[in-house]
Structure formats: structure tokens, C-alpha cells
Image (cartoon, rainbow, N blue to C red; front, side, top):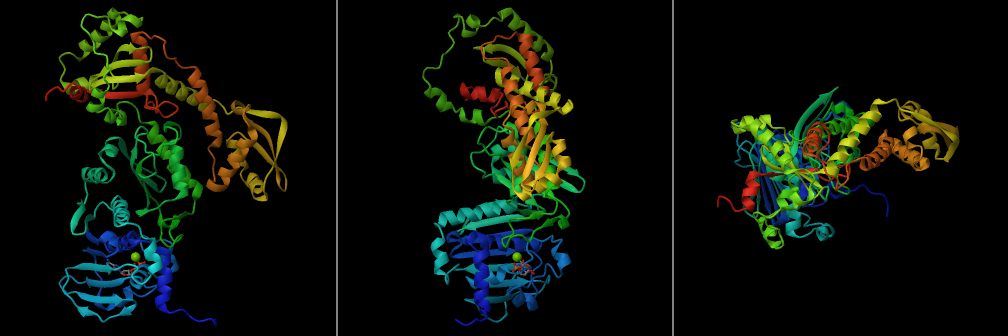
Length: 595
Ligand code: ADP
Ligand code: MG
């Protein structure tokens, strides 16, 4: 075949192949346009999972009559005009490709009114054939009607899933955008039935309400809100306590300057922050917004604009990681609600199913009396002190006076501490709690001590790539900070001469290779810290109270107070919860009280 220029219609269809994968991709582009146009309300009407029709109306700026045709031509945009604009894009769109691409694979109708009291105009494209601009009444704003998606691309149609699946992708997309554009109201209908309605959320309460609507009540109840800025970077949002984790990475919303992204660097930084509080294999849940100077992010990295490139990778990674690590560390009893994922599972029916529940028989010595070395008198003394302290106080004052974890009443089977606090009953896994306390102490002790570096008797030679060897030369300062003395000893050779003393028995080669891999991909490495923490964690485990050790009431109370003071004390070193709260309401429910 001779070389020919492709027709504009075919060019658009090829472009559509990149960005318009399924109905949800159309919704994404259209919603982004409405948001860019400053819409306060967006109405979205979807039929048959979006395959039959996607109709979106907004009350944004609208498109003037003489620009309607341009809006549908390729590489035409009102959002940028120069390279300088591109380098500091604030709008969600900027490539001028979405509308012509969509129009090339569907029947598209664009109706808009740009001036406040003018009447609207409509422009239609059918199979790439443009019609005329016709007058058509329309309220201020824009309506785009996309019908019969992929009717002319049978190959694409084959890849579409069921109506339900396609629709759930659309819903997920609306949720994703709704969590970053709180001032805009969203109304979503599927097959003429309302399926989602999110009013504009301006106040903090309304925003929380929207997050609850989108991520579920459990998420909002077990997450904390924070807002931190530093040196031109701002990170804010909601992160779930480690106790509320997911088996899938399906509740991770991250926005960079209002743009939803799935960025490897950022995901890595967040995971790292949850490092030693998350149970093995679990995924954290979060809604996070990173804001920074648009010049420091390149958003033109991907046609669908879901990936970004940061100019200063290390800075961003470090900032996200450190900020979240601090926020998570500060989660302590009293500032957080106890993990209730467990208590949710404890449903009444399930409890009654367990027929062998031991009911107390009056007058019969309880298991506690038989096994515990703590005398009943001692127990009562502890209880009396608390009762006295709380006597005559209003519930609010009582809550203020009682420590968050309350006071210990007894030890159960040498494993659990039973305590009473303002909300009700607290159960503490003694070993898990003590392990975390010891671990945190060891870490603090270690951080404070000078980094002791131990020279290797026999330096370790490693074969690496030229790129890695060069990296070692460039990163001398950072490596020294990590306690590694690592030199380049040949074009493809490096030599390890010293490493932190605490790690000396570790497999140094694997460690160095892991650190190198991190440096190359993320520009920094926490592998040394992780390896060190692993050792400290094992030490903590061995140095902690074992099950079946009896504690006195004062000892138990000391442990509770230590927990309140210790960072990350809600989870043991392996991410299991250390304590659970049972409120009086929950207990009442179990006993069918007040029914
Ligand atoms: P881009 O968003 O990258 O500029 P599009 O093809 O998505 O490219 O849209 C082309 C142009 O049409 C936009 O730059 C904008 O000026 C206009 N436009 C599209 N949708 C709307 C809308 N809902 N309200 C106002 N203007 C719109
Ligand atoms: Mg666009």
C-alpha cells in the first residue's frame, strides 16, 4: 500500500482506542469537562450500563455558539495555549481530544447555552458526519448526549461486559471524582431510576457525610481526618486506622491537585507508612489529597491522565511517607475509636448459635477465682478506687476523668485483661499490647542512640549493573545516613565495608540489593529501617509478657497507662488489634436489654 494520510475520522477513532475503553471512560471525560467548566451540579443519566446512552448535563460556563464546532474538533481546547500553560495545568483536561474521540465512536449531540439569558444551540455528529448548528432551548450550561457507544466498532463492543459490570464501573468513577470535588453536587440515574445523589458539601460535616456515603459508615467511623502543610506541599484527607483494613486495594483514593491518580510512587509511600501496623497481606483504606505547585507535577504522562510524573520524586515520596507515618503513630487509645471490625462480626445470632457458651451459675466459683492469683480483695480495691473517682460525676465529666482505657478489673485465663472505661468494657490482649510497647521503646532507644556502624572483617564484593554502580557513587551521603559504607570498586562492582551493628548477622547481600533496587525506583530506601525493625520486633516479642503470666491489678493498670502513651498501640507488631471496646449499648443488645 502506498503511504496515505489517514482521514480525520479514522484518526479520531484511533485516539479513542487509547482513552475510550468502556462507557465509564466516556463518563470520566465528560465529568471532567463539566468540572473544568465550574459546574455546581452535574446530572448524569445512564441507560443500559452506558452502552445505550450517557447523557450529562451541567450548570457550568457553557460553550458559545461559534465554538460548538471547535469543541468537537481534534486538538481544540480552551484550557491551554502555550507550553508554559501545559507545564502548570490546573484543569483536568487539556489535550482537546476527548469530545472528537467520543464523537467518532458514538452518536453525539452537544447542546449548550453560554450567556446567562441567551437561548441554547445544538450541534450533532453522527458517525463522524457533522450536522448544522441549530437553535435549541437549554438552561445555562451544557448537555452532552452520547448514544450507541461503539456502534461502529464491533471489535470494541465485544470487549464490553454485562450491563451491571459496566454500570458499576461508572458508579465507581463518579465516586472517585466526587471525593475530590466536594463543592459540586452529583446526581446519577440508571435506566430512569435514581442511583446516587450527592449534595454539594461545603462544611466539614457535609464533607464527612459525603465520604461516609461513598466509602461507607464503617470507614468514616474508623478513620481520622488530618490536614498538614509543609514547604509548599499539603496533604489532607481521611485515613483508616490500621484495624480497618481491606483484603483488596479497593478503598484507596489518591488525588494530586484534584486529579485522581493511581501512581506507583504514591501507593508505595502510603504502604510504607502503614508498614508495621497493618496485618500481613491487608490493604489500607484512605482518601488522600496531595496539593503542590502544578509546575512540580507533569500531568501529561498518560493519555487517560491517570498517571503523573513528579519532578521531585524523592521529596514527594518522603513527604507523603513521613506525614502519614506521623499521623498513624499518633493514633492512641482515647484519640481513636477502638477497632470495631471485630465487634461488628459479633452478631447476636452468631452468639446464640454457640450453644456451649458458659453461663455463670450464681454461687459457683468462677474460672477467674479458681485460676487467678489476684485476690478478690485486690480486685475490689481497684474497682472501688475507680468507682470512688467517678462517683457523683456527670457522664461527661466521668469520661474526662477516666483514662481512655479505664481501669483493670481482672485477668482472664492469663491472656486477657478485662477493664472498664467510660464507654463500657475493654478487653486487652496482654501479650500483644506489651509487645507493641516494648517494640516502640526499643525503636525510640535505637533512633536516639548514635547509629553504630560495624566494619566487616572481610569486605563483601557484589557484582551489579553499571547503572547501580554509578548510583552508589552518587548516593554516598544517603548511604552513610543509612549506616552503609558502600564503595564502587569497579565498573560493575561495589564493595560493602560496613553496616549498622544491629544488622551484622543479617544476610547483607540481600539487604544491599534491596536497598539498591529501592534507590533506583524510589530514590530512597527504608529497607535498612525495615530490617532493623524486624530484629527489634523479634526482640520485643521475646521480651514481652507471655500468656499465662499472672499480673496484679496495679501491673495491669500500668500496662493500660503505657498503652495510652505509646504510639501505634492499637496494633501489635504484626498488625493484630491489641484491644477491643465493647460499649454498654453493644452489651445491652447482646442481652436483649431494652427491647
Ligand atoms: P479538553 O477537555 O482537553 O480541552 P475536550 O475534547 O474534552 O478537550 O473538550 C474540548 C473543549 O470543549 C474544552 O476545552 C471546553 O472548552 C469545551 N467543553 C467541553 N465540555 C464542556 C462543558 N461541559 N462545559 C463547557 N465547555 C466544555
Ligand atoms: Mg476534556
